[in-house]
Length: 544
Image (spheres, rainbow, N blue to C red):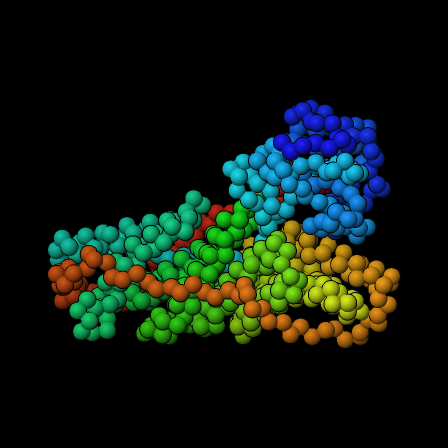
């Protein structure tokens, strides 16, 4: 443990800690820490333990398990600090080694108060860094459902190789469908299962000898899939390309749901945040590949308003890019990058959401209203972020009047987003039933805008005395770093099980005469029973 100062007696783990100095008046700083009046002695459960530490008059109370990291203050202004509150109390992290394997130590003897808390990047028991309260909320449409496919071709599959192919297709398809709703599934498992099925399915699509553009088996099987927006109304095509696209669409949806589930969990680690970012880029790449390379190959045109229509796929691609940039923005804020860069990233993200909303503008409102509410509120939300951090940039350039006007514009867009949050919760349609305004990601921005605006107004009243413009500053921001591009995607090549001999063992001349290309009317498609993927309640170590 690091050396202790003369102010606080060296602690005994799990024992009492005493402090003779008094805390200042109760207040809430810019990070949301709140002082709380308590008893007469400084006590707790030990360094790095669970509990809280107080002095004679006031205290900060920590919920959850602390990691052994400490913040000590307020001290002299000459200390400097990672952050400061509106009343300019300074907090400083000092180096050293404390319990729990984290680096920190007590304040110098001149420090006025000792306070136990967690830092921005606490560590868990395994030593992995957490991104403090880096939780996100994403709208998700339901998975597509499909009718069972037996791949039984009696008389047509005239040999063991053909029968083996059909059996493997049946089992690999069933396995992939199971993983869509398996909470234990990870990206590696999903990729392996998807590649296994798609490589076998390629034999129904592509010719092995490359003499023709398609396989003779392409139209042998009928496939039926529902729609994410239009409920359980299925579409059916007797085309293996339709199956490839529909299943690929569901794989992309799974990546978005996996990212959403991971981003909403408590105590997300830095590695998990990278996994969220990567999964969203993979999903964007799949949607883009389907739109550009495979949708044009369908013989039957896509119905308007269906999942495979170009404008819906474009909306999915852009939404994935925007959500991945949300993770980039959170990371930039965590690492205290320049406000100008954060403002530019937020502005680009708001434009992404606006572009996705525009792609859905001509859809039937009964199907797209809830989705569009989400896109619109996220656009307003990140526009508010852009104006907020742009205001900080202006203040740093001694343009306090313009900074105040930028922060006022941020308040306006935040208020719009707040109204849209309420409307989103009341709108019927595909997607989760939640109240976004109560989510942590939303509340944090409100506090940030309010505190930054108050700071600018205070500085203008004491130092700058600048006139506040009537027109909001124009956001002509361009981010040079951190912009998200979809990960290029390609379906796997045809499985090695497909050989000319295997393909020849399928004899289409022996198909039953009563075989029909029309789907059976009585064949029902059962909806997918998805697990609850709502974000977990944030229970990380915080101050109440």
